[in-house]
Image 1 (cartoon, rainbow, N blue to C red):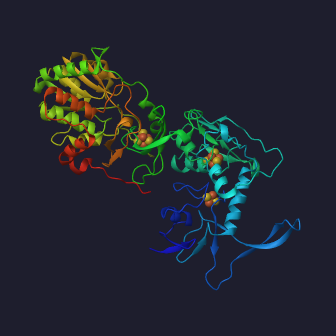
Image 2 (cartoon, protein in one colour; image 1 turned 90 degrees about the horizontal axis):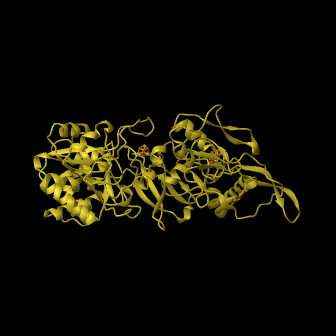
Image 3 (spheres, helix red, strand yellow; image 1 turned 135 degrees about the vertical axis):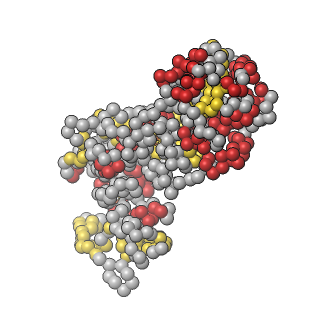
Length: 532
Ligand code: SF4
Ligand code: SF4
Ligand code: FES
């Protein structure tokens, strides 16, 4: 692989790499605002300027400039090398580039920072980007001086509602055009544009439009400063109080890699952010996915119920045991959940198929939605492929087939994982069951009609593996503690098995994974497509 030198260190590069790209792959960060690895190069912020050192024996290319001489209190003629933007300059074999080691680069970075902050309101105390803002970080790293301009700043529109999800503050905007390029290049909806020039520049909406495509929160996320803020997140939390778990989005079968940001003090999840994985979602997530964190807290089943009345966990467990013990194996159905992890599904499957002896296996989940050409899959469940892979002998039947089997008297009892019905029209069939035990994270038809409901932890409250539509098994980390009296479904399966007298005494997730591995093999084994 060809290499070039950056501050004396050999950096390998691939044909077509810019200096900043190759450096990033090697783990070296060159400061930048406008460059984003997933967008075209605009090279407008000039924060990434680097010095190209001349080959041995050659003179550097120098520019004539005027420099302020503090002793003479006047400008004097001087020379400086012509710096180049690392985001635009292609890497070349044998190049020598100076970044952190160049005094000229350090001065350029400080000057760019000072220029960007010249008219900036510096309202960090009330800005939602504070704590993860590049203007703050780079001021500390590359500037560190006070504002010299004493005049009133150029005022621009603030609090501009760009659409149902995003608010724009033109005074905070550094006009890097990342948001414009994201809408145009990734979403293919050029709804944003730049208007005016110089310090009057600002981002504006296309005439008659709102920022309302399916990737508005991602448009906000690519903004390196606090100019775009999400109405969903603004003024809710300070990012330095948040911790992040590495998770997988449960919004659809694409399985985008995400960070789940939560406050450990109140065990509340505040947002999802994309986590880079070039094999799955690259750098992006869709709005539906980024807002799907709300389901962790909304419409949850938090207590055990028997025939609609709250009861103790022990009472509900005993009633569930009674229903399952009395159910004839040939009339017992098990409903797996495409919303739940492999581990949860495997535990329920093992209990029902191998110990209770049923051969009637169904799968349910959220009903189909609309996909798009960017990321979104029409299957709004994260683990349809995982459930299918676990059912090694015959594929699971659908919820509609379950309704038919109940109507025709083939199924009289059901143990269901999850409460979603993938066919809302057919839920009436559940009223004909003689016994329905539902392990539910959320309210839904299967919890509503259940004889016994056991509160179940959501994907954010336990570790789990999900297989996306491409067949990639990906692990999702636990973020917060189980809500209410809920427990992970694999653990509830263990409680039920013990109550029924079966030797399935799993108390740790590792035991479930060990038991699952030989059965489902590589199809549910964890693989990682993460590039960096
Ligand atoms: S709103 Fe943000 S992303 Fe868009 S141009 Fe301004 S600073 Fe850049
Ligand atoms: S495309 Fe699917 S997996 Fe990706 S963020 Fe959207 S809902 Fe989540
Ligand atoms: S990152 Fe903005 S000019 Fe290179």
